[in-house]
Length: 117
Image (cartoon, rainbow, N blue to C red; front, side):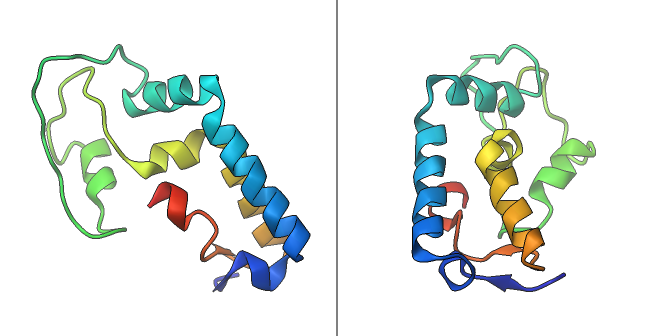
């Protein structure tokens, strides 16, 4: 299970449209922002000190991994702006991954591109 295909190549047009509509609805739910913010702050109260640390690099380069593993000292209450946190708390992300796995795929190559990249 390692291939990626576009969602419209695997699901019917109606199924793909419904899945996309469900994602849009989830992202607009009032509680979604709070869930994402809690994940981005690592479960701590976010701090507002007017400081920023930018860790830049291409997708999948290991930026988030370096932060989690202590490669960079991150102060308590720092907020990490990373699309991975949206994917982590999104039930629709899990649903789409499950659908892809049921089709023998690693994921849908184009499904979340406009939302989480």
